[in-house]
Amino acid sequence: MATPTPPPLVLILLLLVASFPSPPRATASASPFDAALAALQSRVGYAFRAPALLRRAMTHSSYSHENGRALAVLGLAAAESAAALRALAADADAAPSAVSRAASEAASGPACARAGARIGIPDVVRVSGQTSAAAPTVVCSALRALVGAVAVDANSTDAAGEVFWRLHALTSSAAVAAV
View 1 (spheres, rainbow, N blue to C red):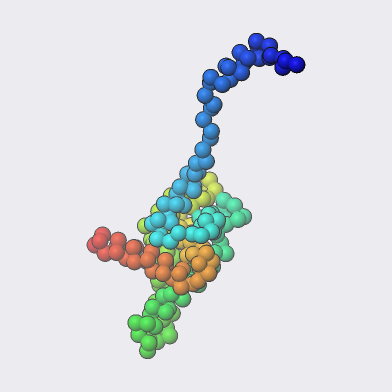
View 2: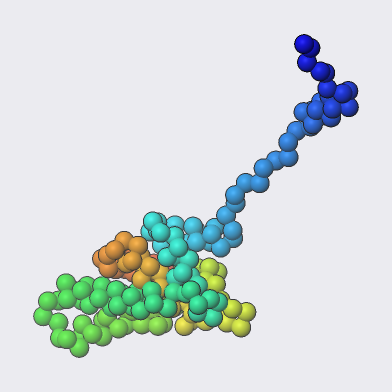
């Protein structure tokens, strides 16, 4: 028994379909926010194992209820702890008031805002349309959240302290260079 041959129209359609190249497939490209986060990780010198932590840290409470406020609390504590540790390492006999002052100055709002601005946080942090990404409180909060995110990601306040000091040193060296 012979197999039936397809009608000529079907053969022509098959030839036409086969002769046209398939359309290019869409490639997964990073969003501008993802690209900004990747660049920020490079500037900070820390690669997140859980990038969602950095996304949260760079999201202001005006933008989303999923934001970096809780991470900022941890970041402030890690920064103050790192500063107090450094002060005591430099002078084990330091007065408690001197250690407290060193910790609060290093992790102060103005110091955090300068460090955050220096690494480009205003260009990365997501805020609502009514909020300025360059406002010192926004930049400082995002920097503290970034330090807190490092602590959670690394499960270590030591790692967070290292990032904090790296950013603090960048700001200090920039201030010295400007003088």
